[in-house]
Structures are given as C-alpha cells and as structure tokens.
Length: 84
Picture 1: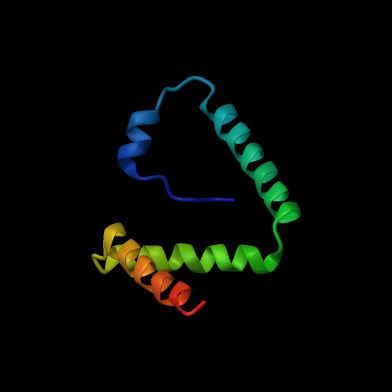
Picture 2: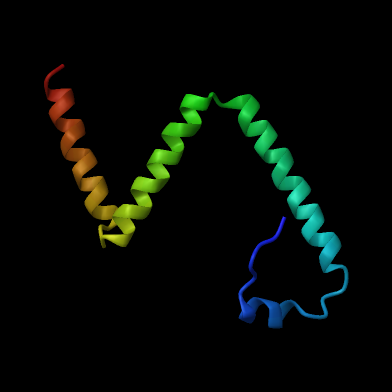
C-alpha cells in the first residue's frame, strides 16, 4: 500500500520516534473498526451513509450552509407531518 503524504506533513513528522509503529497501530485499529462496521451495518445502510456524505460534501462545495440544509429539512418535515 502506498499513499502520498503532503510535504508539509512529512517535514513536521520527520524524526518522531516510533512513527512507523504508530502508523501501523492506527491502520490495525481502522481495519478493526471497518470489520465492526461491516458486521453491524448492512450494505444498504452503508450505501445510504456514503450517499449522505457525498451529498454533504457537494453541498459544502456549493456553499450551502448547515443552516440552509436544516431550514429545508424543517420545511419538508412540516409539509409531511401536516399531511398525517
């Protein structure tokens, strides 16, 4: 596995003792968390969460604020509950 580390990060972490062990420990922990997530949540639930995260990233990139999103949610919620 290889990945790029930004130059500014590399310069900040150079010389940290045991960094390789810390990174390996972090990756092991992340792998364990991912196994738990896969066991706990269905593929459908994971896909819904991924779509929500992509949508949030798109909204953020478009300059849409949380307040705007919540206002729309509140409006839609009111419309639905009024029909009940």
